[in-house]
Image 1 (cartoon, one colour):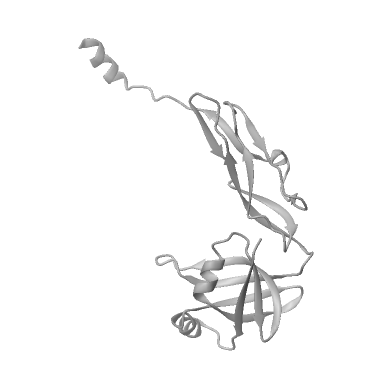
Image 2 (image 1 turned 60 degrees about the horizontal axis):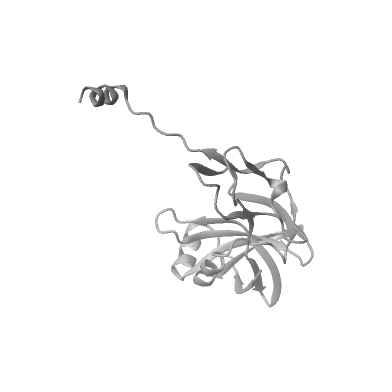
Length: 194
């Protein structure tokens, strides 16, 4: 997992007007909290933060008033229409500390020949991992699975040092048989008359 360094500025102005001024300057208001410390209100560079947040569970190295702190995004608020970042909540972490995060479940391989559908019951998996070694995603093979097959959380291989933080018997993926649509009764009657 890559660590992204960002220069942060502490802020003393709060409210809508201050937040709008920050956003007009191409910056994003944020709050850093955790470890029993008082929340710190900061401003982050908008473009760099937007790029960093493209990586799931990114580890941010924040330079706040000359002091470097590690944080992970906990809540991201975006403008509903334009998609710009409105506000970000960051959680302080330490090297070696375990955190619960959600990682995406990716599949590889092909289902068995036939009319089968793969249902993603859970698209993410909640895991506990060291803050500096959070996996971006987990991959599971669906090669040759047929209708009725299910992959449980405990069946998904996790990277070393990562453990499940949900019920191990939770269904993550399942294979279903495709249902054929029945022709309407009127269409069948017309076909036999013709």
